Length: 281
Image (cartoon, rainbow, N blue to C red; front, side, top):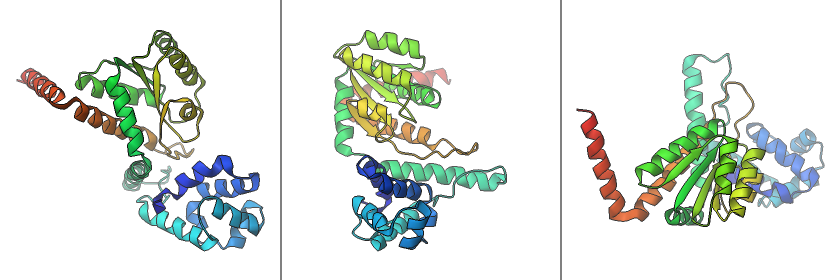
């Protein structure tokens, strides 16, 4: 397990933690840069739990001791370009906000890259490669990702359609079959309309691939769940880094499909590029 994945391990452990241990977990996730300077008594006081509870929390997330936990916190902070200080505020000038936006995005991409399962990605690519029709669902900021996914798949000569309207999603879901695959994209993983569409698509025989946070309803409901865990924060100026992470994951999937298509896809892309070049003359 790589040190940079400490936060992901904590998130994955949340359902199994006792209530008191979950309080420690929540505090650590929200104050990662402060915890590095804490003694065990400081963390116990900050979370209003006992010191033995802090020790149990450390062991529950795979650390043998509180000191090993602090070491992994330090390693995660050191491996993170943004080092947690990426929230853009109205007090920042353009240079400061520019650096924070880039740091936040790079940080999100590195965390997503390190958490991806290659075995799962291969299953997703195989499923999409065998699909007769690919449907991409996304609301709000995720609708832009869905449109981008449609464009990338269309370039690969795949039949793909993006839907951002809940009514159209439901209509499409009800008409699907065993040869259909849905890519459900969600930054929260909790949107009821999207979950309803996923369930209907599955009942119609379709396979559902999700891009959503670990443990979210969307992730738990999907047949193949690609977990993307990005803490967006609540500040009004905070950049939506999860959208960028979703876009890059779609790129990875598209590359996998292009490789699976072999020479036929290569020829199609070459011919399309030639036709597009003629439009620029």
